[in-house]
Image (cartoon, rainbow, N blue to C red):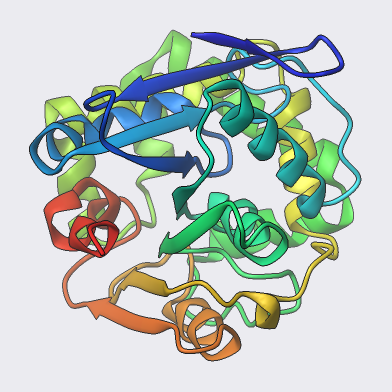
Length: 281
């Protein structure tokens, strides 16, 4: 569905699960789109979750809006809840989307009652040990030249449209076995490619903006988060180091950390039965 921001811009949103389910705002990762929330459809129906999955500005079907820092997206999140007449929700943030979910929890505690982070990417000053060399170089490049970093990610999308097998050879080259196996299954493989390609539906401006925001000061303090928080991370993750999960958990008051042996960056979000209990209170 399409919602309208106060400035008239369109926000594309997918709604999954029963209409009377527990409202759950889903924040997708970098170079991804709302389509990645579709992996939650079975658990949303089974456990009574109303998943609200928007595209961020410039990605998927959402109109571009200039943001100066991660915290500026909180305004969009509030407008989405207002448009759907939802006074309060819980949050799920995946990978780069974890920063946007955390901003909502820190800055709008009256609207968000619970935060679940899945393999969250931390601020640019956090260590990158354990990160795959290609991923580490990409983030370093993005911090210095986000425009070029976004351009490279957009070239990958073009490869994905022309040759999905070549695309997956590139993106899985440095992934652990758990992630290769997860992306080797037909359903997750198709969903991953669809989400990536949809992120660039309007071009690369939205992804470039996300990259710029994530590699600059975020505009809020993780220590201001007071809502119940659980941080999940795969022990085999080479896309985002497990140390980032530990730092998130230590920075957020009374956050719980759950490290999952054998899981990677893409296998963990797909295994929703492993972490979705934390959305049930």
